[in-house]
Length: 50
Image (cartoon, rainbow, N blue to C red):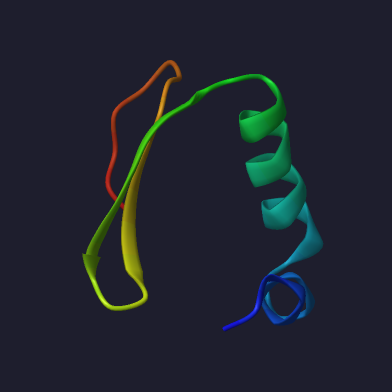
């Protein structure tokens, strides 16, 4: 999926939150675990899996 398609598919609030995390340097690792499936670690106040 192209980033532009992703941004059109996902709720704008979620896209904005992700961009904010990136801008603030809160993304610590990005790992492709299988084709087009990523695990991303973001620093924050709580641990959870989605």
